[in-house]
Length: 434
Ligand code: SDX
Image 1: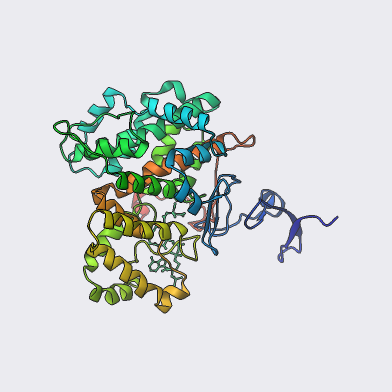
Image 2 (image 1 turned 90 degrees about the vertical axis):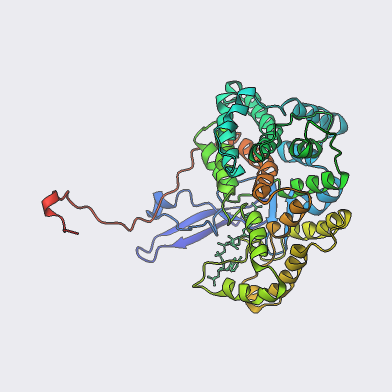
């Protein structure tokens, strides 16, 4: 029977090496190069991991050419239309859609962990009022391990599950508190009679002095946005969480590392950057000049919210978010949000431009999400925090999957060294003078 392998030949030595091909349920097979260095003395070289699978996973599948995204096999379009965020959270964590009893029990568990330790509130006082909320999130989430010693033994499945539930439950509370801190208002405690998103809106926008009515359109829009942002295979922040977790670091520290990686404008920070870009463009007449800058290799400017390492087709999430923009804006009598109009025109013009067509640059999930967040009253600096709340589910699910791997080992990439060769120490008087 033909072996499922591929063979490489080292033309320097004539040596051949047969490498095993591993195949999943969908997507490209992988070449197992685990013995390459031992057999041929070479490392592989793939900065940015454009052709590298870092792990096996059964959680999320993406087909970048077709613009396909599945969570545990379910198409994102169906989950966005029919499911809700806590049900999708259960699906990502446990692999199956919950039955009514499982969903009720899971919802009750998450609600049980929504509060944060009273001492944590003093932590916020250490931040200046204008601290970026992502900086606060990194600090506060990283400090959770100082409070929860009873769920940091990562080899204990019960500890892992308890830490997972705590992080998913507390992220909205920590996020809303970072917003309240920035506007000098008192923190609002979680209200466990509310939905996950209703509770977050209440903690963000209610004040003790008057009743706060949760807008069902806002609650639903946020729930769908959280579903869309929940997981996305081995993106930069998820890979960061996996690498941090591979050393045995506690789960709270791993999630804090994911928040740090997500913050970058090339990743989750793009949703905030898109709003600043649209405000800078200002009007449709200025679009050609900004597109010219985006195409100019000498100009570091990039069209934020466009392009993707994997999607070389329209990001399926962006299509859903764009449709939602109409619904949310119409519900708030903001039919004419000039920034949304500008974003739609920018997309039209960019997608008809040869450069964007040739480079297969389409809007990604971050291009329109800020339009909705803005319409819901979320301040721009909180946009990436919203992404982090949702992505905590994916980070936790991927971390749990990795830790449970029987062959789990510390991740330790190698390098191509091109620095100085061996040389002897030079005394001070033997060195070139400035
Ligand atoms: C997210 O990985 C994930 O799954 C991420 C994410 C998730 O859910 O976790 O989907 C969330 O991070 C979405 C991406 C958000 N970032 C942005 O919108 C920032 C703007 N986009 C780019 O910076 C860029 O497209 C990246 C970072 C998203 C992807 O970068 P790649 O894959 O490394 O692509 P590249 O930089 O090698 O670009 C390939 C070519 C280059 O031109 P050439 O040198 O080949 O001629 O495309 C050009 C780039 O200059 N290009 C752009 C561009 N994106 C790529 N040119 C102008 N504007 C852009 N936005």
